[in-house]
Image (cartoon, rainbow, N blue to C red; front, side):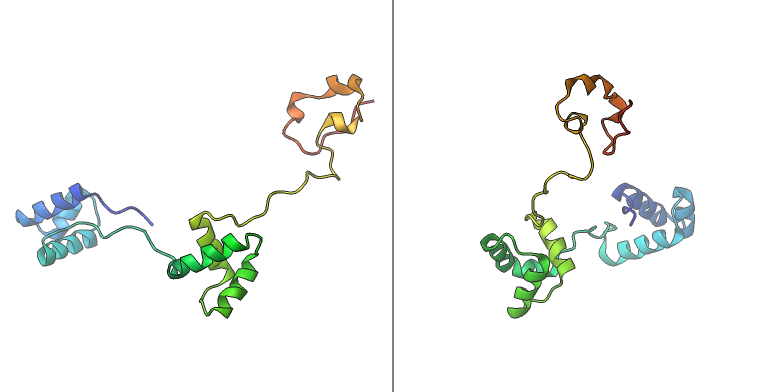
Length: 155
């Protein structure tokens, strides 16, 4: 969604309309849509202000139950999202795994376990692949550093 127009451009359009120009003329002069100028003029006549409505800031429906959820995760940090949802249903707290995941990312509570061991099926270090032979060290090219699968060792 695009950001709202600044208060400055809104005030200029309103000032031009108040000076006698039509709303469409003011919109054309400031290169905005006529509907925006019409809405701003109407808002200004009704409220005396042409400020934009608050932007963003939606809240999760789980905010009401934040204490319960955070306590639950603090007591049992290894729960999966599905297990959390099952406990929520027992306590008649509405929600889904997706909503719990979004809530945990907003509250920055850990939701994933630490990464496991590196891959054992793919060689990632030339030194380990050669099992300690130092004479193969000059064969490592700097371009290979970011690759996970290295090309075969030249013979």
